[in-house]
Length: 145
Image (cartoon, helix red, strand yellow):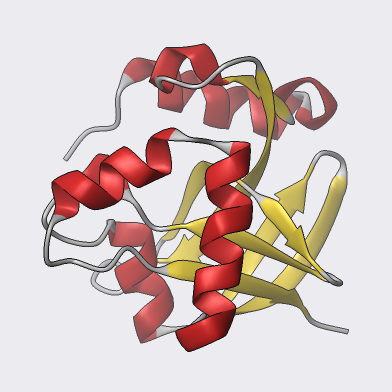
């Protein structure tokens, strides 16, 4: 499935000018104002190729967190499925780059992080409503030494 042009453009900008790409105008997706984004690069579970996607993020101590919403679609986004197959990934946060290990938050931790991310980007609650029986994963990306 081809990515929308605005996402392709965001990836390209992140790779050429990460400081400029870091803040994304969320009004394109129903938010208000500029939000911090990171560039997540996973290994394709089928292709084995590196695949990058920009995502809104929040901080969780020394780690970062992202939401695997896919806009409320009935199935998980490919990048999340890639992380389930291989949790090692690469993240770029503005001009800082890290190798990270992904894990899915559960229970009370997930609930707390969901509230934090929903405050950052309110459309997440609507995405969860539309997703119905699919609990949208909250993914914690822990930088590795």
